[in-house]
Length: 210
Image (tube, rainbow, N blue to C red):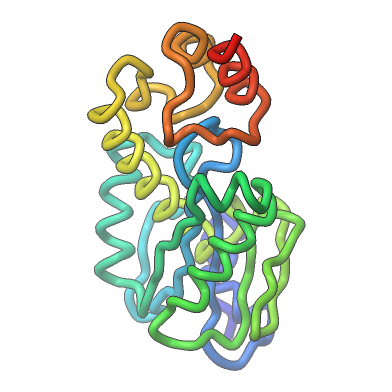
């Protein structure tokens, strides 16, 4: 029997996909910022421990994301948060580094999934069947859970970057190319945590050598 929420979103997408075995959701955070690692999370939820309020992390308040982060970690069958570093982003490009972080997250799961559902339209190279779902973080609970883990983890990393480089304002913009961040780049130059392959950072480095 299919279990569905009143909103029409599947309670457990595995039921509608007729997958036998555990289903993992995967999402990333931090593809667009100019600094810091890209983060990916993989989650396998427990049908016997439902979590209310799972949504795309971007539509949730910071307080709600933090609360759900703790609940997901407590109730999920297993989860894993992984990163690709700034150096890896510069070496591989952001797309390939994102796929690397996703693969690390899946491979870091304590339990092997029978299938992996990935937010977006591209898939990392995995040893298990996988499917990409556009806007999956808004449609599929297990991907929503992954998006929350990835987002909260990366926001916490940015708080650490803010302590190390307070003049850049990482706690506010999380590394995204806001006017304030771009102004700080022009004034102070690039730090070791900035992604050199991104245009505004590359420009800041060029200007610092003029």
